[in-house]
Length: 144
Image (cartoon, rainbow, N blue to C red; front, side, top):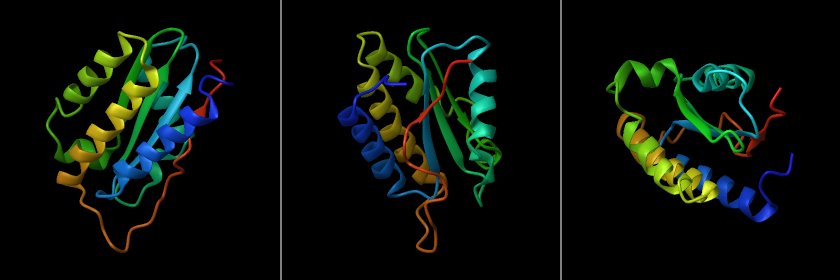
């Protein structure tokens, strides 16, 4: 599915790498064109399908975007949800939405990644013995 060109995909990948630089948190972006169910349910489905729940500290984050249906969600794993306030992702979502409203999907995702990385490092600082547990590439789904 060619939602983003190679340069846009590389820009997102670089933003993921940068966001993870100062945190042990693991972030992934999942894209599809349409979302045929509740956006949080859909994001949760892909969270598990992409093994985001298998990080050592349970600190995986999935940013899910359905480009045609204009829906998105941010899902954090149990380790994150245990230590952050309930509105932890609100600022990230608002900043992303500000870009999405103008059709700047890639910029919105990159903005979300930057904020997520900055937020996560407060609760999950980088660990020298840590490894990149989750792939940094964009996961493209088929919308089924």
